[in-house]
Length: 289
Image (cartoon, rainbow, N blue to C red; front, side, top):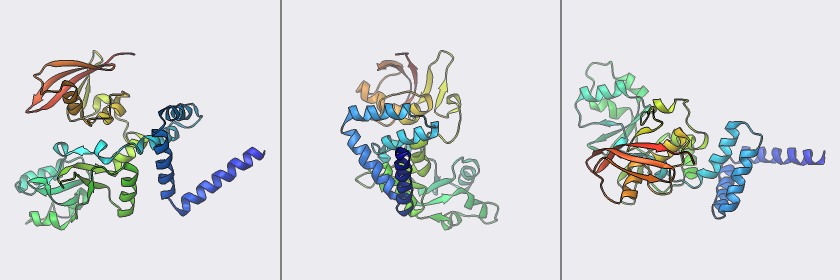
């Protein structure tokens, strides 16, 4: 009985602290994760302990996600600029209208020429206010845009999550030390690091991953390694390059001539297509340990 009383008292205190200061949980998780990262053996023990707890799957993933979140920056999970969809004001109106009508995104950067010249962020639902109107022009798009929000590429994910909450933002443009836009980060992508994909789509329906009958996968070179690991349950190394293209180039140490293959841990990778100096696609097969 005394143990139960102590437990419920501690939980009541935790809830009170969270109500008084929601940032307290992030600061606590950051400090705990920081200490665990400096002690890999203890970190491994904590991960195993969480895995053995009789908790719902979602709660277990949240605890493990909190431990991992502090190790990542926005640079690790951002969508690279080559893969960003947006509205280029230098395009003609027919091209812009086609983009607005077919996009699967809720928010789009609006720019002139390239992302370094971003003029604003358009919520696609606002486009309904002018799409059916006669005399529609590019000024209508800018009128319904929010100012762009820029952030440094080395911002830790817990800090960025709090900034999104404070500024009531869901999308930001990631810039390097020279002020060049490197990609975009969304609130959804950070939350997915905590709880996984919000959708339950199968791997063979992922736009960057196509499963083959022999057990291998055809993967787009621009696909994020963290997304690949999360979708397929793999463990490709993520402590270096962020994309499959970057991982292959780092391992090969040269621009390959397709096809070329190599092995990384328990994975056999084969370069299939090149696009300029980038690897467009590769075949990856996981061997059983």
